[in-house]
Amino acid sequence: MLKKMLVFVLVLGLISIPSLAYAQNNKESIQLYVNEKPTDIKLMTKSGTVYVPFREFIQLMGYQADYSVVDREISVKIGKSKFIFLPDDGYISGSGDYYELQRPGIQIDGKFYLPIRYAAWLTKHAVKYDKKSDTAWMVQYGYGQEKEILDLITTYDRAFTVELLASDHMKRSYLTDSKIAPQVSEIPDRIYNVDITSITYESANQALLYVTYIHNNQVMDDQHEIVFRIKKENNMWKILQSEPLSSYTNLPKDMDTSADKIKENFKEKQQSVLSDLRTYYEALNQEDYNLTYKYTSPYKIEQRNADALADWMTWEKSIMASFEYEDKVHRISNERVVFLGEKQAVVHATMQWSSVSEKIEQHSSEYNALIYLDYANGHWNYSDEFNIDANYEETNRELPEIFFPEL
Image (cartoon, rainbow, N blue to C red):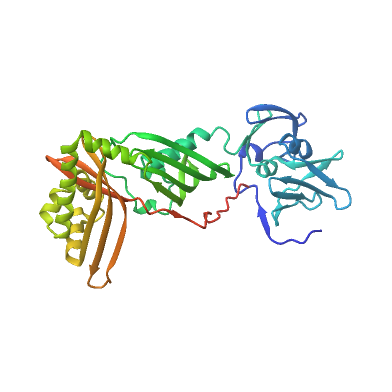
């Protein structure tokens, strides 16, 4: 007998399907459906357990089972894993680990039968049984779930809310939904694509996703990748874990053309954008609170204050603390307007900044920046900034493994 490395006791009663647990011995065979389609496989019951003819079932699933007369072993390869059934004592070997079956397989007339729950778990199917009609259904993990999962990860990227997170998500306890409705961007998408590059169903209610987002518009060509672990709660898919894997952002090839057209056709308006932006940075460098407040987007101030979990986290307290404890200098050069709408504008510039505090040595940086502005109160106001050079690639591309027992 093969040496046991690790033994997991799979107790049917821990996660049970009552209809299966109380199935009675049945002289009539039980009809099996797989993914809503009838099969020619007939199930049977013995001592309250429903069994499936293993070789016929494995072949139906597209795999091949082999039997060794010498070793009295039945083996099957599923994906990269090889499973070995020992009918005499009921052990399964999967990927080097051993699992002890509470109810081992049985042999009848030379056929090996496996409890249907184990067969379903082995081939990544959920199973249910209707005693009245003597019918069992197997549904492959993820069957018919593609649209709901795609909707989940698209909403996560474009309109995140805390409600998208699972109840046991590590960050849910301290995240709150914004009380301010999100701004509608005037910058039209050129390309927005969500690609699930791979999906692995770890159980009927959990899956591991690798997702690539491509978002290109007039001011930015962006591609970023995230790994998700999702789970089903109350019959809805939720985010359990997420980790960014890579981010690549470039300027569009036609940005020079866009900037030239704006300068030619909207000379005065684009000059106002640049003039107001310079006023904002001058106020910031001079630590002029009133002028900085005046040239900061009212929407951003309102959003920051609405989402603040404490008084010191408000926009007003944060900017005052920055003025008191830090000496920041911002310098922009080579600035040009690359998008100009009715209420929104985007400036591309070279950003240089340095910071000195009482306890921290001087820090400085230079990078390509996209600076977003809103129009309100008769002038343009600083809203946000994006570092176009901050690309990265995560070398560890896996989330911590989570074991989800199915039986």
